[in-house]
Image 1 (cartoon, rainbow, N blue to C red):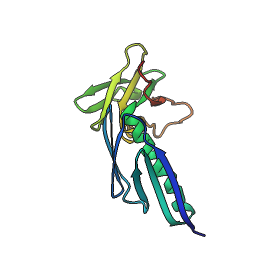
Image 2 (cartoon, rainbow, N blue to C red):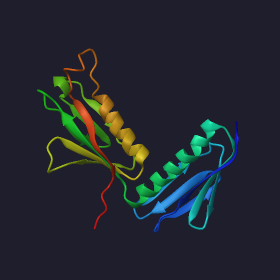
Image 3 (cartoon, rainbow, N blue to C red):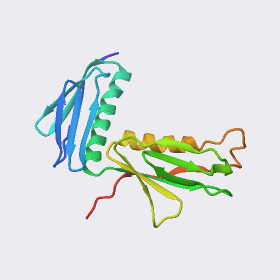
Image 4 (cartoon, one colour):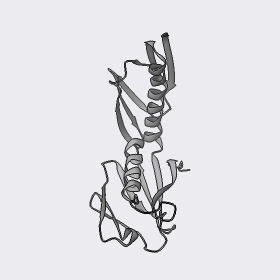
Length: 186
């Protein structure tokens, strides 16, 4: 059964400018500018005053889920240009200490399980790598776009996947320990 009209509304926060043009959204805030394209979803996105409205006409159940997904993506854009996102990753090792360095636009992982192979993960534009000084064996990935920051964290974690060994015993790797928006500066 189809629903005739499904509508969701998002309030635009203060200090954020939004441009909506043919299902593409450009959000500008104090931390920068983000852009998102929703042309793959058959919906209407309209900005009226300080509200963005997402309309879906004659949608099935699976298409109705897209309305909330689009709204969540737009809200993530707002948080990105106001606060930004930070993913903290910790190194876990039992014997061989993992060595992680930044060389150019690549994160290089050395001495993982004592292997000589150097694992490289490319940092996309808009993602910043920070080695924490106060906490041992921790890195931070900081950026405005949650998709790029989380993708980089996932690539770093998957580069240290263990194959052909018992996963219950070999727990070495680099894992996400904390994630979310950056804390607001007072």
